[in-house]
Image (cartoon, rainbow, N blue to C red):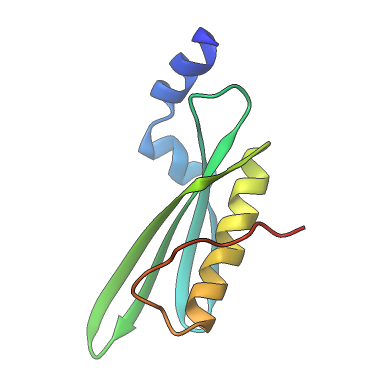
Length: 102
């Protein structure tokens, strides 16, 4: 457990960017990454969505705190799916929950 906590603290933003999945979807750049949790062998999904709106560059970050995943890859896949759904739904102001893909 202690080793996992130390690893989570050492997982810097620069390291997150190295393993980030990046995809363009409907003129939006989606960057998804898995962040380790304090619990053993679990990951959270973090997403940043960037797009142009009326000459202004917009960015919307999300950290899906209500879901944990068994691997970094699962967290990234969930983040990409979440971002696409958010875009398809018209970029609602509030997001209450999003069920993970089965």
